[in-house]
Length: 128
Image: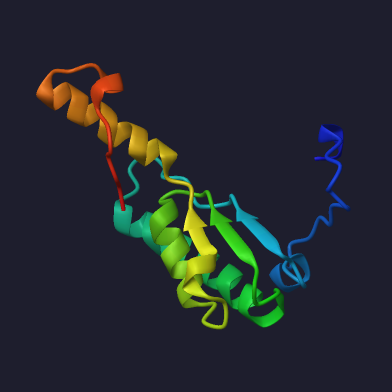
C-alpha cells in the first residue's frame, strides 16, 4: 500500500486482531474469504466464511464508526456481506455493499450465449 503513494492513506496497521483493525474506521474493505478448494462442497465453504465474516461483523459492531461504509470483495461477496451485516446490527444495512461485477459479467455472457447475440448487446442486466 505504501508503494502506491496514495495521498489519503494515513498509515497501515498490520494486525490479526479485528477489534484493533476496525477501531474507529470510516471504510472497511473486506477482501479476505475462504477460497473454494478442490473437492470442497459449497456448504463447507459457506461454513468457513460464516466464521470469518461473523467475527469481522461483531468487531465492527463493537469498535467501528456507526457510519462506516463496508465493501465486501471476498466471494461469495453478496452472501458474505449479508453475514457480516447480520453480526453488525448497529451499523445501517445500507452501509454494506458487495463487489459483484464478476457475477454481473457472467450473467451478461450467459444471456448473450443463450440468445445468440454479442455480449455488448445485452443491456440492463441486474444480479442480486
